[in-house]
Image (cartoon, rainbow, N blue to C red; front, side, top):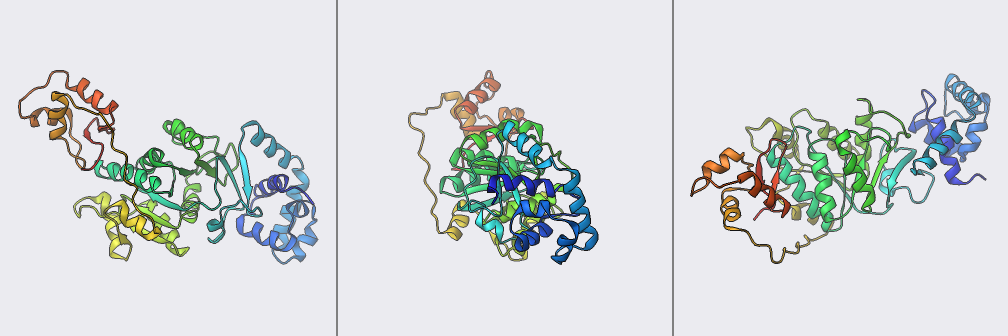
Length: 368
């Protein structure tokens, strides 16, 4: 009998064959048990299983004969890049993921993939508001601090902020629509490294070297929701990929939660519609943790952190929800202009009490 870790590379190689996807492969495994056996089987025997149509059985058999070195090639790449694999045949495959429709037959990952972790998915729009950013950072941190692993897709916007927040509180898992050796988007290279390096995991069903293609992301979304007991939609427009993830969660019998937003904000329409359709309205991390039977872990307050007179004046005009530009801050100061405002804001950001967004607007880092 072949060792499971070697068997994984037979699986990976056979999934390269056009027309052979997760569903066919899982059905073949149910009949023939061993990936190595399937790899060596002739077309007639494959067809006799009644799993594959005759033409597809011949295609798979021909593919295996014509690509004899493919399993070793994939194994070599994984070893060189220190990428780990887990298949649906193994005990350490995430149990909740087995329950979804067409679970991935094999996962590639960097970091630590815990099979029995309690997970919540956090998803949202790439086009985010300051409100969405603040919510993703806060919820990511507090849900992770309470013991949940935060799962998201490492996309720009809400996904990235969810991961960043979770890194401050605990563990997070990023699910990619490309190979785990590819940073997409490229600016998230450090984020992906930090996720794997801090006890979390970066995972994908696509073998190393696979470039991100639009068709891969809806399939990726089923893994995000499939790994989690519930999915929290932070900020999403009426037509958003995040809603696909929510639909997949519902189809798998998982809970869906949504953050309400302004009725005048197009970027909140998707969440508001989910709530209208029965998703649980979430206003604070405790609302999600209650569903998991967990309590909010109170953060340790920073001791000895004192503000200068200038910093205190700036802090008073800032809010958690609405970022302000430097001009708006200056106009809001009761005593007029503060010298070196940009330097003061930088110092406050380094102290962790102020956050700057991509539009160079500033808000308080924590809600009062």
